[in-house]
Length: 130
Image (tube, rainbow, N blue to C red):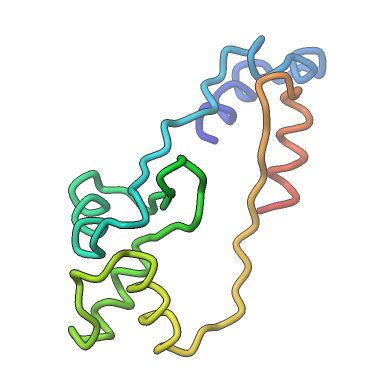
């Protein structure tokens, strides 16, 4: 998003907002860090911490996305105080600790764009998702 804001500040006329993300030269994709669904919770959390990530994808043997874990889950692990074994596979671990803590119904809006989307379209999406 910061790259998008820099682009807008450099090119504030309406014509430049019709450029696609690709044409504007704005990098919009990041590599997705993932772990297999069979990995221990402790290993997944160590990866999150070592790479200073806010979240990672959990995939199956075929590379299909089956879940995710985030820094929020590390907080849940702290609240769990070791009652759930960290050598449990990540999905089983998450199922246990997430159910143990009352959850608020929180929404985290997101938007997805492709390199052929115009800058104007991306700005509209960002405005809608806050």
